[in-house]
Image: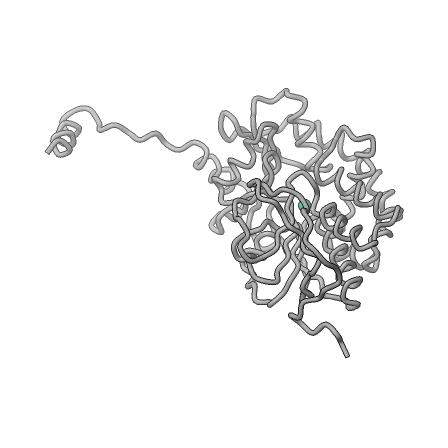
Length: 342
Ligand SMILES: [Mn+2]
């Protein structure tokens, strides 16, 4: 018989420990009694989502001796998902009020302004979600040299630490998930995270990086489309989009403070991805009802925008609002002024 029925609190340890300091300066207390989750929910879009989700699954297996199902979401589907489970663990998805539920654990690193009242939030914007989940695993004796390395590569790729000597290896690892997709890689490694480290497909990613990225950088750099004085749209043909945009920003040869790329999903919605060097990306993403990190943020454009040219038109309108026009001069204008005065 299962000793740990759903919802029953599991006391595997004792006491309350300070796990760190939250964004708003309140201490994050990590109590050693987790509640068994019905499901683990993670971000489908990248390596960090895969690493953090599989690590939480491993942690749940260690604590409860069962395989808790893993579900992965892109931001758009995530916003529409009902949160009904009495207990769940969430990682690499921004904390919002829908997740503030008793017996929910959220491990994340995206900027949030919401203070948790009921959920347990483990949050640090300076670490990857995978790192935060791994620290929980290490507390339970689940650390290994192979996982140390994978989580380090995940940090380098997710936090975009371009100066790190392992940046190329980290990018190749992250590109596996970008190129083949979350569930394809999950299937190929059979859920076994360590198999990402020396996966044969890494060789394919290295060739793509060496051949495609320089070609893509030259072409994209020559074809940036101005959207406003500060914002440029970078079209892409080949190569690692993140890296190309980063190199264009770092080179400083363009007049824009924000560079953005556009991606049209299968259902026709257009995703905008924004990059900057001084925090302008998040500010603009917020204006577009999106979010993310200070210099790496994103947003989904309204459903009425279905094509890339529509997206360019829409963004130009949002970024360059028409100035309020003064009453026209002449007889019409004087009538308006009289009406206003009365
Ligand atoms: Mn992440």
